[in-house]
Length: 88
Image (tube, rainbow, N blue to C red; front, side):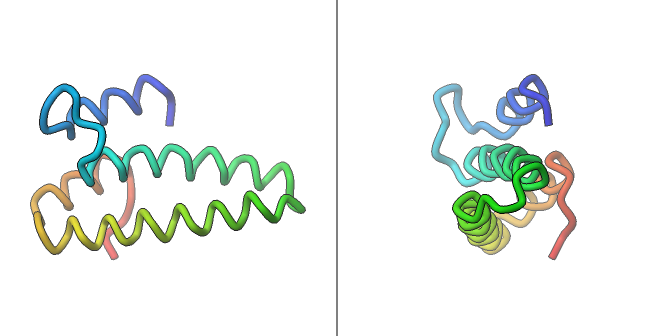
């Protein structure tokens, strides 16, 4: 996910211009970081601290997605389509 695509997706899901803490924006940020760490772990297979951080980020994103699914189903399905994840 490129930086331009990341900012365009963030702009689409923001509820107001200074929105940095809503679930949707946090999920987009975590998705970008997760994709970067996946590439890093492919190159550095023995970097266990990065793998641990990656697992924590995936877990946090899963919890945020579950929360969003409970509270706002429409936003959940549209966000999954925008960031390219499959529904659980």
